[in-house]
Amino acid sequence: MNPVERQDDDSLKIYLPHAEGLVLCSLPQRIEDLLSQGDFNQRVADRLFPVAYEDAGKEAEYRKLLGDDLKKRKLESVKAFKATLENWDITQSGVEVTIAAELVETWLGFLNDMRLYLAIELDITENDWSAGLEPDEEMSEELALLHLLTWLQQCILDALGFVQERYIPEGEEPDGREAEET
Amino acid sequence: MLPATTFVIDSGSFAFAGAPLASGEPGTVSLPDTETDTRLDRIWNVIVWDDPINLMAYVVYVFQKVFGMSEQLATRHMLEVHKEGRSLLTSCEREKAELFVSRLHRYGLQATLEKQTG
Image (cartoon, rainbow over all chains, first blue to last red; front, top):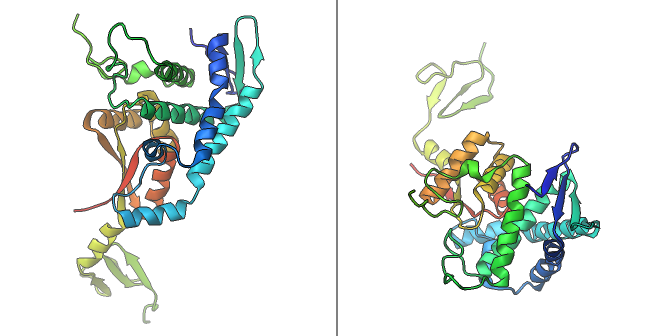
């Protein structure tokens, strides 16, 4: 069952178990710190603020024109995400959060930035994220978080009508691997 | 009566206002090929690149949001990125292309601009 429900006013209601809810609430501080540092991992910077031009001169012109716009917008999305989480409800079964319709896009963007950040930290370059793990190896905290955020982002997209299974080419698994023949 | 002294510019030719625009007609002057080259010089391609992290459904969502594409077209571009590693999303003037790229970056997609050739 999808833990994300679309309401009549296009807001989304998310129901999460306590543990997952608490993990979610710890995220804004993590990425806010990261964006405020300014001197974070160059690979993370390159991915969150990618180049638009191959030509260095044109890229410099573009960056000058853009200024801090992208960074400001990303920080705004962290704040909006944080503000939503401040109004969560703890119920017997877990945590309940409502995302206003106008913030759904911000949430999706924030979750994606967080996933990109984790993927860089984990050095993920293949569609199959667990490819480097030995069969009995336990997932790191970061990889478990990446899976949790991916699942949540997918649940939100599902609730909006963007169901991942519809887009996966025939003969492929959701993680990009080729399906095993049965 | 003489035609007005303003010019009407239309791709590849210009004419006095009121005069027919078809090439070879009186009042129409064909522009040299360099004009076509200049036009091409102004057109930039917006390219999006494959990424192992962005979800297929998310990419379709972003294409629809940024370009107002139908789901079918957005899906076609997403699958092209997935299979070929890149997809040409649109071609337009530089300023507009930069705007599209900055919006794609805001959503976390890897996008670049390339000058259109040929």
